[in-house]
Length: 447
Image: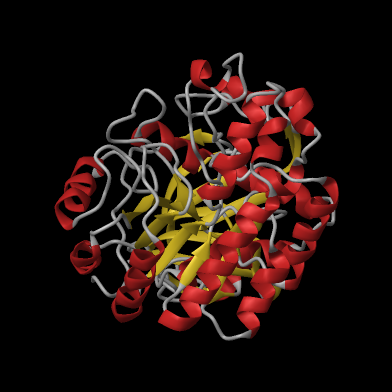
């Protein structure tokens, strides 16, 4: 019997390098890797000459806003954006409404989202004061990990006390799942925000109101707690503090870190021209700090790339006062093209991007090699790209419900040609060509 799909003549990219080979896919899994002449017959054959075959991108940081805030985004529109942008698995954040703070809500959310995903998806649980006894239940229900916020964000999530955070870390060390943390300390940011609100409305003041010390203080606190509790901590949307992260890793603390394309492309001065469209938390940093972040990407201090896809309506993003405008921007559809552009500019290698965008997030959250790898037995998830293709990002062409983005007008070189999820071609050249058949994916703790 012929297999389902054969990928011929492409250049396979792994964290260890590149090589030419064919890949055989059947039943949603990779069944063989080798020369074209060794492959079995297939019902469909893709000739990928001139293209690079990457393991499917795992975006471990998206906010699809369903349930509770679907005027900003919903799961259908958000996951179609992911597929169009070359992302094959997403990790959905828990600050939807209701907040995902117990097993019941997590299971209800999983049931609600079934049949609405164009790519595979995982769900986070949320750590809030006094839900320590709920963590094991959420893990049993299939949580990929947990989210902790040191600063208040969309959804009105209050910061837990330090004592409770430490107790939750000890509990997570027993459970074995990773906690993803927004590391800005709200005590610092609120002080500067209230001070600056009285004297200025200019957009760049958002950067001054959330200085690097707020993030660096959070990183130090989390590093200390993790070293004592023995749990796994993943710092999300890292914009600075890379020396502290490096030092924490050297002590043996189980610390990993994510950054986002916006922190590698934009800097503080871009706030003057882009205004609230570029208002994100943490904010973009000064040029010299961006360069240091690029260095941390290349030396391994930064482990993953994520989009922090955080849609808001145009009305919410374009308030007259920078203090009233919502923080966050869409990014799941533009992440891969922007990062491929940085590869073409020489800021990092394609193999390093694969390590950050596919292998590392899957390993950190316990779903490797099911996801994040091109290996026999792995899910047949592929992001197949043309490194020479160019285009200008146009906001109106994006698939998200809300299309306001700081990358509008950004010229990219390197684009997804095929997005393949478990052997099914979901998107081709940025357009969706199949139905929403994505699955709720759980770590092995919850088979």
